[in-house]
Amino acid sequence: MSVKVVTGGYVIDFTLNHERYRETIPAPHNRTAAKRIEEQEAIYKMAISLNDKAIASRFPYSKIMQKAFNTGCNYTIHDYSNIWFKQKQRNWSHTTIRGYTQKYNSYIKQNWGHLLLTDFKGSMFDEWASESSLSGKSINEARNVLKQIFKRAFHDGVIDSNPVERIERYKQETIEPKPFNQYEIKKILDSLPAPYSQFFQFAFYTGLRTGELLGLRWEDLDLDRELAHIRGANSSPKCTTR
Image (tube, rainbow, N blue to C red; front, side, top):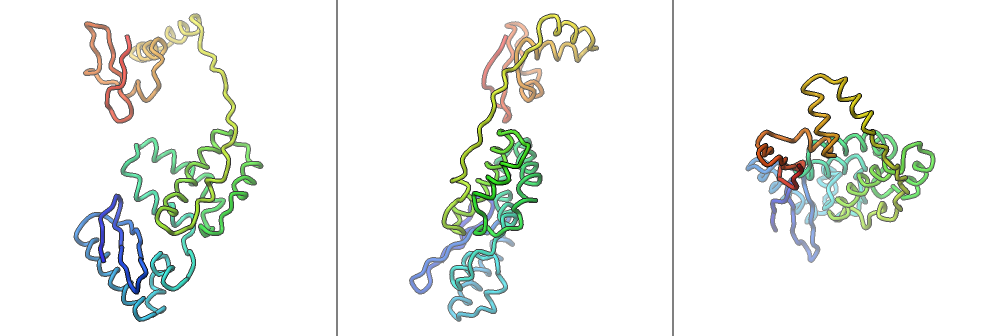
């Protein structure tokens, strides 16, 4: 019998009548939440010991109750997207959170969010993709979000396999970039007031990405050596440019 602290919540883990029961519950790490989880574990054990389905019915989304009373999976894709998001978001950048949220709300929630995890089939995604006007890149990004949701459920033991693993990635067209020529660059810079002209001049001649440009600070510049230390999304130096 134990309640373990994990990223984003707690894990209830105990053995009863030679059966092991385990469940991950999203919750903040504080004394109030830990006490509530311990009380919940005691209720689980009592319900199983007494074979009391009335108690079990109070926890329709509990994996432990599903196993003990063979109730099947009661989680919808939307239910588990919330669990996955709460457990993982602290490790994501704001850009990643915004991207995942947009892909989920635009493509996944409206098409399959209402389905039970066990009712989803890979063919549903392929059918949607075949009728979609989205690029292969956007379809693959939606597939990745859906895959992560099911991966979390699989690792928690809620489902037996991840159906999204069997969905093949879609072909992404590679579009050759067409950079501005020197004449076009000069016209753009001449039309911009300071400090925007200097900003875009630096961008044109260094090839930095937007996030790298916006992340620059004065302390990243070595004017004497004509060097700029470029930092990634997490502000750790990764390269230099002249």
